Amino acid sequence: MTNTTTKLSQSCALIIQSCDAYEDVWEMFFSALADHWKNCDLEIILNTESKTMSFDGLNINKRNYCDGYQPASWGDRLLRVLSQVDKEYVVTLFDDFVLEDKVNEDRLLECLEMMESNQAIGVFYFLYNHSETHKAFGDYRKLGKTADYKVNSCPALWRKSVLEEVTGKIDSPWAWEFFGSARAYNDKYEYYCVEPNSEDTFVYQYQLGGAIRRGKWLRKVIEPAIEKYDLSLDPTIRGYASESLSEGKYSLRWKIDFITLGFRMVGLKALIPLFRGVVSKLKRTLQ
Image (tube, rainbow, N blue to C red):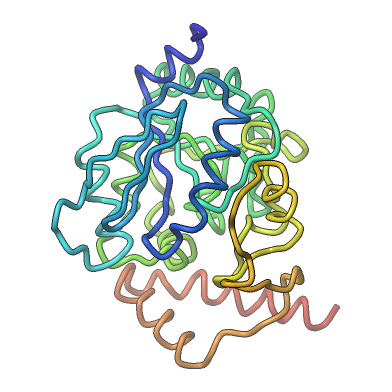
């Protein structure tokens, strides 16, 4: 085990955001993780309701963090997990980020050391944020005070206490990004992302959003992984999603519930991302 890996494992836990319904994704995800993060010794926490798993070569904690507790939502479950993590920092990945290249441990360590030396830094995102950003240093940009998706689900190194601050018990993953970002407006912490074309820390099909869209597989992502790792996965059970980001619409009921949840989460601040979303949609329509 390298000194870099040792330093990371001493300071960070790796949280994989998932749920019991995505159990069929885990063998593919962990096969790719073990392949592209050799000798990873970080404690891995599979954030899910009740199920656990093990995988050769990976330090997956099989303790059920909910321990019979029935969380009200995804946010409640994440907060419960974080409250029991004994590290100051957490690396977060979602379970359908199927890695396709070597994890850049040097960049992870670089970000960790900057966070240790500057208590104002709350998170480093390892994808570029197309919202308001400002040139900061090296390969990193600082997100603006009211940047869209200032809180988001892309691969990240978080200061655990900051992640707890921007998460609410009633949050869903989608509302956490869209509305939860308002919790970070004018925040005392600094949020950073990498420059475009510098997304080399966790390499996956981020242009497509991962391996699953609206509950169905993306063929371009999973078929090479099934073949490479000789998986017994039957993709026809979930079926295949379109690779078009614009295809498919949410129901009116879903939209009403989503907006209602946003106001419950952040009050009138929910109007800011809603207004921006409408403006963005109008611009795309008029182009």
